[in-house]
Amino acid sequence: MAQNGIYIGEAGELRVLSELLLKGFKPSKYIVDDGIDIVLDNKKTLQVKTCNSLNRNQNNTDYYMVGLTSAIYKRGYRKVYRQKMIADFLIIWIIPTNSFYVLPQIEVGNKVCIGISTSKKCKYEKFRERWELLN
Image 1 (cartoon, one colour):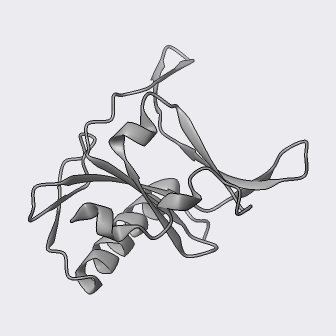
Image 2 (spheres, helix red, strand yellow; image 1 turned 30 degrees about the vertical axis):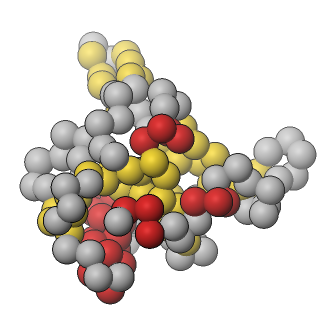
């Protein structure tokens, strides 16, 4: 059975919930996704994105591309739009490496996507497994 993007996204939210519980947080999952997936007992809000596919750029650098846009379809045309991130943090789960990136809202800004390089020189590496930022 092929993996559907909705199922992968749901699995990502559940995986992050599990990780938060194991780290001593008390998370609650939002039923309606309006840009917030999880809220913690300290009132910090989280949006979760899950990535499963590796890409390679023209410099032969491997990276994971995490899309932050939504798409609407109207009369056969696709319009991509970026919703302003309202959550306090973006949690990215990279499935193949089982890695988590905990990015504060200020780091996300108005980006439509975030590239997580497999190189240690990745600008987001400093946010890898930084769960303490949620305290």
